[in-house]
Amino acid sequence: MDALYTDDERLLAKTIRDFAEGELAPLAARWDANEEFPWESIEGLKRMDLMGLTIAADVGGAGASYTEMAIVDEEIARVCVTTSTTHLTHISLSASTIDRFGSPEQRQRFLPAMASGEKLGAFGLTEPSSGSDASDMQTTATRKGDSYLLNGSKTFITNGAESDVMVVFTSHDRSAGARGTTAFIVETDAKGLSTVPMHGKMGIRGSGTANVFFEDCEVPVANRLGEEGDGFKIAMAIIDSSRISLATQSVGLAQGAFDAAVRYVQQRETFGKPLKEHQAIQFMLADMATQIDAARLLTRRSAQLKDAGHGHNKESAMAKLYASEAAHFCVDKAVQIHGGYGFFRENPVERFYRDQRITEIYEGTSEIQRMVISRAVLRENAI
Ligand code: COS
Image (tube, rainbow, N blue to C red; front, side):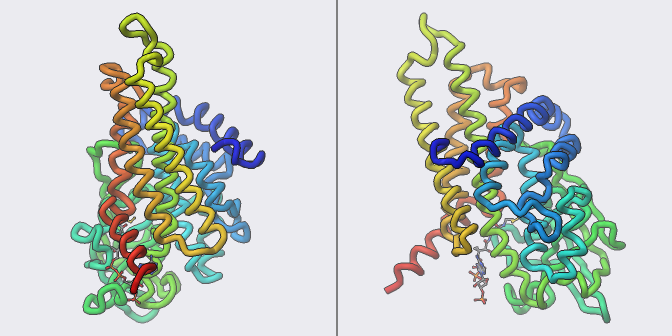
């Protein structure tokens, strides 16, 4: 794969790898053990000019393509999945929605501070009773003069309690289903908005996850994204591209687990020879390497389609589905190769094993990806 990269892409990967290994790797275990939000990593990401990575240049971002994002965020996830989740939520879900669907005034008002990292973004879609069935929202928005009053709650919101800016999806007309949804940019210091951090996650334990409550939370009409009724389509379009980011995360963490396994098999001996000389181990490495490359190629294809302005609904779902399941395979084998040592907290593969599990659940479960892919396939082949 590396041979297919351009010189610039190779340099980008090396720069981010040095940053991630130097600044994120030493702290990743502490963030995980203490369920501590990775503020130090945000400082590093700001200094590396990564908080505005894919945000357009006219509002202060780096204007990077999704192909470049896939290189950068693979290197981050290879070392720290917590940082990757925090970063990708900020750029690929929150800022990206404002960048793509905000008015010129909204883009100028919110994006420069998000691109510099001064303001952190979150994305409020999931609710206690609507996850996969995303259009079944209970949070309401009621027009009152020049404002809307938001009432309801969101759950599992990444960066929820730490964010300054949250894109929030609501229903202004529950009888209209998906067509009755409306999106807003909400500043998290707004009166009537409160957050309660959620603790006790299996993995990505340093990333912030929160319940968010709205009680007559007043949001100006000027903060509405698009028109009333545009909300669900905005959410779906953003999730389509954000799935490329999540596929990237899975490739990165699978690569991290693989690299640890490859190091270990060359050091550890059993039955009088290094692990690497046992065929059972060699076959595991071969399957891991093949799945990682296939996942990376699917991810790169979906990024290239997006960068070229083509539809990528099916392809990003395929990348996310395959990469997250390949990551499942790889973390499992990495722990198996490490034997008892892989079962202990001091070993990064133990953390990758726990961090991986959410990749098959968030941004659409594997079952939702299969639903999206099969719908597209049947649409393309309709008779
Ligand atoms: N891009 C743009 N518009 C889309 C779209 C997409 N990818 N997918 C659907 N739409 C539009 C449809 O065209 C339809 O519009 P019309 O009413 O004008 O025809 C509308 O949205 C409703 O579409 P559909 O009937 O297909 O919606 P469903 O309720 O069947 O749901 C799934 C579709 C299951 C794909 C959707 O709910 C989903 O992706 N759920 C998972 C959500 C998720 O990932 N949650 C995790 C948290 S995200 S942080």
